[in-house]
Length: 228
Image (cartoon, rainbow, N blue to C red; front, side, top):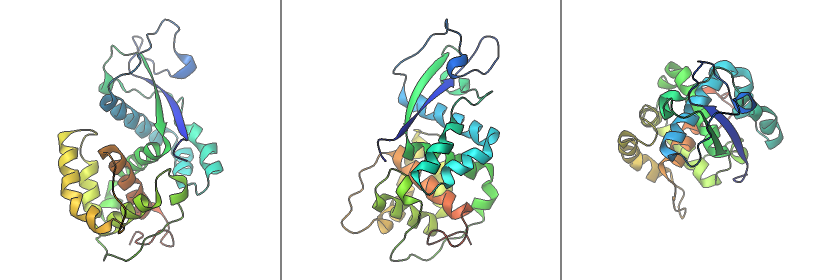
């Protein structure tokens, strides 16, 4: 699963004001390769946020899928979304970028967008007591190691406010780094014995966002530590 990625065409700016992606782009538009990753991550999240707003049902089906085939059938809803601009992240001098996103990052960004769309629901969650084990049926489709998902589920159960604070920060920002540091005690207590956490901030952010999404929106019979 970790090798399964999606390719997105993102429009940063267009002189005529139209939002066009993929094959709709004029041949004369300049393609930019190897742009700064921090900016690309911000642009990708903005695109996911727009997709959630414009194709909520299909995108919800993508992240709610519990098997790979269903997820693949619905991930196409994340491409070629009309009227989605990412110019605020990359600047109007960039016309077109292609981005290959790992499924774990894609799912995390979609999760974050849904949480922010219905923030009050996530903010109403209370911290639950720490449990010995955590499991959920969505782990298999994330592309992440199971101990990583277990840790994220545990943090979503015991410290949802900490994850929300992280999601309020800019992607790749100094504030994000500080928020991850604040979450360190929760990460430590939730990490399985013998499992060494070796993940960058983007991986942490997206894993925690997805775990909080499932706690917030899944039926109570889902993951341990479900929404109360």
